[in-house]
Length: 465
Ligand SMILES: Nc1ncnc2c1ncn2[C@@H]1O[C@H](COP(=O)(O)OP(=O)(O)OP(=O)(O)O)[C@@H](O)[C@H]1O
Ligand SMILES: [Mg+2]
Picture 1: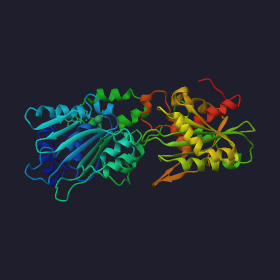
Picture 2 (picture 1 turned 90 degrees about the vertical axis):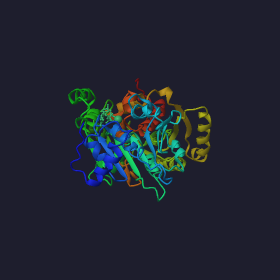
Picture 3 (picture 1 turned 45 degrees about the vertical axis):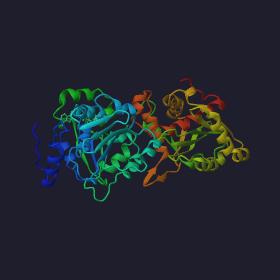
Picture 4 (picture 1 turned 180 degrees about the vertical axis):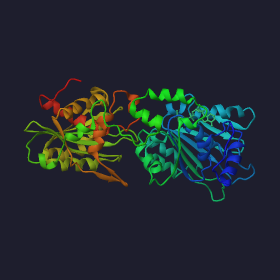
């Protein structure tokens, strides 16, 4: 296909000609949107929107731009590139970005131009340049990059990553002063996924600090547009809006367990229930296990007028939530909590985890008169099943939500636990594949753990799922 360079500056054209068109390792000719992305001289750039818009191709081409270009006799010129996917499965999928890199580059192994080491998923080029593929499932995986120095970092499906991972890796984008290779941080993604909000804020919104190149499957001349459009029409409406139309603004308002309108009608002010008499109060804790998870705490009170109220809800991404938990219990003292129920930690020593919490809360529990226990996640089924009875009671009005639960700032972002919990009830879905698109519903799980203990003590709440 003919490359048209209309609208690009001469500087952009020279960059593209030398680093893309004359590059042996890039067998595809970029189409218009890809050209804009590849010619970007900004440190950070983002490509995407719709499915099939040539995102993975564009990212791979961008990573290879300096792999066939380095002057061989200059020691100062170094080019090390890294491409990330969120999980090992994502990385190893057929025709995903690593597979495509193999298709493009392995034919050059025989010619001595490329050497590939599968264990490291690393391509080394004849001139010393490297391109490595990795996945980044957990925050602990970031430790591997301590001291790393990279000139290109590409995130395929960026909205699957939490912001802290992106920002940490950004700090690994470095070079020596005399290395002329530009530093580039590149992302490509559809809307949706755990990182949707921060990616939208950073790249998509009108007032975003960074820009982006929108792409559509209809821009990609290598796809059959009618056929591909029909495939995307088979998706549920939210995903169809995100993948077919690259819609970053759609908000799911109605799900299998809850619609937002009903949820909002169940909110009551603190003044409404502050003089009601508490009969029984439980606190539920969902512990964070992976990078994007939050440590969530909820306080549920059954009052003598038969109303169940979610009186408090809090969560933190911190890996040291002890003091936050103590504060949370103390601030709910007036509801007289009787049980603090943890999600039982997975792994070999859950007993020690519970002993740890019991010791930590020993003084408080004897002073306030609650006991500390745990419930195993597997005994209560999926997150969807755990939320089911809670959602049922909210829908039928027997459970209400304190609308005055405090919001708080996390960095520059205002975190509103009440609306976070509401949106989780809306997007909770029994299919694990669907849930991968959303942040782990930790707040909802903590409410479910509080509810679990409540229904053991208050008759009439138990519900068969
Ligand atoms: N410039 C190009 N030249 C030839 N084929 C291309 C080009 N760009 C993309 N394609 C092909 O179009 C198809 C879709 O591209 P790609 O997988 O990069 O899109 P994507 O936006 O990453 O899709 P997805 O949303 O499924 O991840 C692939 O088969 C890819 O090889
Ligand atoms: Mg892709």
